[in-house]
Image 1 (cartoon, one colour):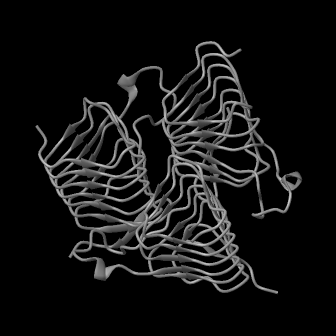
Image 2 (cartoon, helix red, strand yellow; image 1 turned 90 degrees about the vertical axis):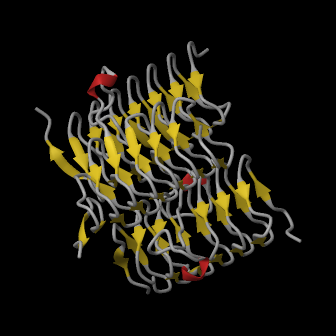
Length: 138
Length: 138
Length: 138
């Protein structure tokens, strides 16, 4: 099972979430049904990570990050939900919102308060609503 | 009284809120003094619905939606607060913010992360900060 | 010590926070390590005020305001964090996000849902993502 897992209650962590080693989850966060979180990833306070989200290793999910799964809510069935993938080393700043179905590439950085509505390439910095590229990968 | 009401504690639901049948309210949400919520409406986790908000039937209020009532805070008196109306069937995506005094029309859909600063006509899709029309009603 | 301090549990208020008289903190808020809050300041529900933030007297911090301290998260050391200052009488609307290192001037007003990425002069009204000036000081 998960080693060195730390959470700051109250949190709402579904028992079906699959959480790696050395993960921390801040106060007032929700980690939903079947969410996958890799090793050494830190989830800030008040984050909302629902069913359908997969987060890699060494990610930083800032406080108040909101992920989603239902593009045209409310869908009649969970089969209409879309998966979101946050790859290894990605960092999402505070209060970022991510629409369903996108992939955020390895080591990408998303600025605070951004709304991500498309895939983000590896290593790039994006910010704004909607998020736009601020700095290309080197 | 309300039939089949479900909330996921901890929530802060004022006893003066008027809540219809078959309503659910997610974890870490606040439903304020005198808020009206219609039948079959679902309120996501971490939503903030303060005094002065009226929500119709069959609405979907996504996680982390923030409604407001005080346009130039802090007003000296609650009499300066403005009412917000969310009509039947409207859906507000995750992390939407609504300024005081607007009406969101029937079956309108507001994209995730949007900031609503004006009335939204029936059946339209709006998104952005400030929210702008994305798709007119058919 | 602090006189007439009011908080609405559950809140996560670090015991090292330095809080003035007649302060209130809403439900589901976090006030971090060493945060300074002046007299008569009100902090709304679900606000996130981390280490490194100083808030003056008579401020209004709306619900779901997110302050930050780490510009390129995750920094290897807290010494890389930047301080944020919110001066006397400033009002931050609901769901405002503030990036690290900025100063929000006296009696400034920040519109709901804004993302503040630069210093805000005294008495001005700013809004948007990124926040831009809406009304100059008179």
